Length: 162
Image (cartoon, rainbow, N blue to C red; front, side, top):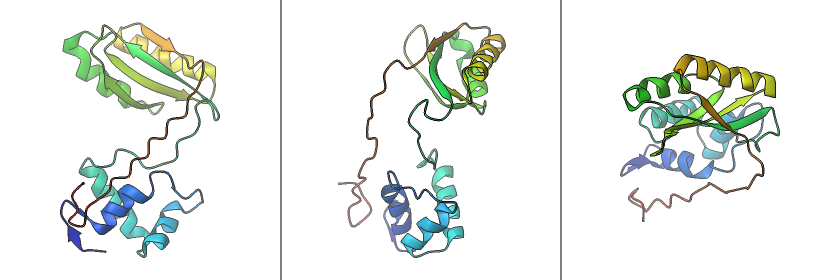
């Protein structure tokens, strides 16, 4: 699978495309992926690490329906512009925060917080508020909608998108 066809090797293309919605749910997901791809587990791990280092992959793992395991909420802060990068980096470093993003709004830093229960979630939001000095806007989900976020990357034979 070392044949390179443009930006990504065939193995990289398959890892990027084939497991967006079909990550094996087993004690050995990377070994299972490797078996499906005809390579060894270490090759899968190293290739995924390379894709992550290159910015093609931000995260590999299952996505659970919100609030089916623990609790979560969407939260926002109104951060002074001069402090935005510093606060965003600190918030993103918390293990309970799975991502954050900047918005063009008074509340300019948005993020999702997950925790085992509501008490822990509130403690994390309190911690963020105390550290940042910015009041946290807590926006718990009232109704969920399933959006299929898998995209066929449709690599052309030369590795370019069509």
